[in-house]
Amino acid sequence: MGLDDVKRVGFFVNPIAGMGGAVGLKGTDGRQTLRDAVRKGAKPVSLERGLRFLEEVQRRSSGIEFLTAPGRMGASIADQLKLEHELVGRIGKTTTSDDSIRIARLMRRKRVDLIVFCGGDGTARDVLEGVGPDAPALGVPAGVKIYSSVFAISPAAAAESTVAFLGGQIPARLGEVADVDEVAFRKNRLSVKLFGYLTTPDSGPLMQASKSATGLSEDSELDAIAEYFIEKIDPGITYVLGPGSTVERIAKRLGVKKSFLGVDVVEGNGTTSRLDVDEATLMSLVSKTSRKNSMKIVISPIGGQGFLFGRGNQQISPRVIRRVGFENITVVGSRSKIEALHPRRLLSDSGSDEIDQQLRGYLRVITGYREEMVVKVE
Image 1 (cartoon, helix red, strand yellow):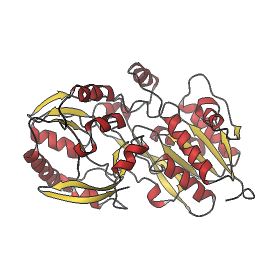
Image 2 (image 1 turned 90 degrees about the vertical axis):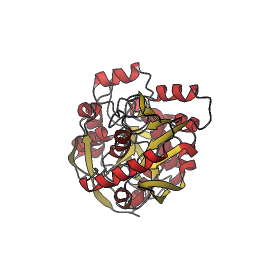
Image 3 (image 1 turned 30 degrees about the vertical axis):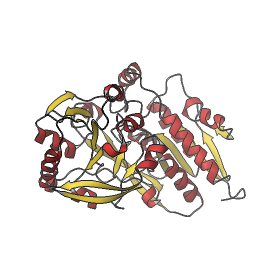
Image 4 (image 1 turned 135 degrees about the horizontal axis):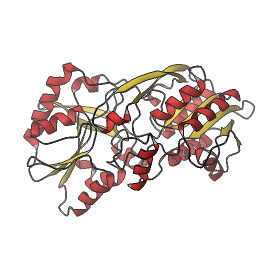
């Protein structure tokens, strides 16, 4: 795509998206939840991910004209990169979903070729309300919970998808816009609702799939995984248990309490030391540990998507992963969950390129009683 074929991209950021992840709040929908996140020390994450997206687009193409939302919703990032752009709309001191809806609508009226938004499922819902299913849109993942299939797997993947779509190299498809009830989510109840569809670039493995739920047929597989894991457990080790039904089954078999959608800390001797922890608590615990390899992380990839880190478990941050050590990460998942991944691969979008790079390669996944699969991490 050259200068003679200039395309127009509308770009905006939800500046509060993802702030609840590291502090264990599982989202930032609602003003009170945002206040709680700030009180707990939450830091903005979406601006950095939006910056990474724009940097990568700049590296790949010079033939794109940007329209951005004002201030911290986009223009501040463009200014930082000295990227020429046209301002669209106005925002107040505190941004809301109404700003995202209004700006997306204005960008459509200006006939941009693609709307790129940086946020989570709530932001995808705002774009859907603003433009409907006909205007092409693409999500840069920055939320705590991302179940919609209109997001690229990472900021870099979003940039690659953007350039390929604008260059006519890939077609468009309809992607699901789904979201969870955050009130129920914080009470360990998962209730996902489909809100509609957005037109989005069809860049295959660069796009994430919708999350799939655990089926009843997996029950026996989960029991077998739990049985095998319990046989291997070390009473002297502290285990950080990630969210999800697979890890919950291990906790149940061990006889300890587990928050279904949270990150918990249990001892190998069968006691729960912390429920639904945040990143600060995990860092405090791992910093107090003087003995090497005395803590392990146990996670299960998200069904249908394959993400290990960066989706719903941001409490297990890059800082925590470094301190615990890559050799002390155990991945569990039913064979049917792994085989249902298309393509069959695992992903990491931890927020650190260094961490994600070190995880790439081949990883053993416990899939049953004394059964393991070797799966590629991309």
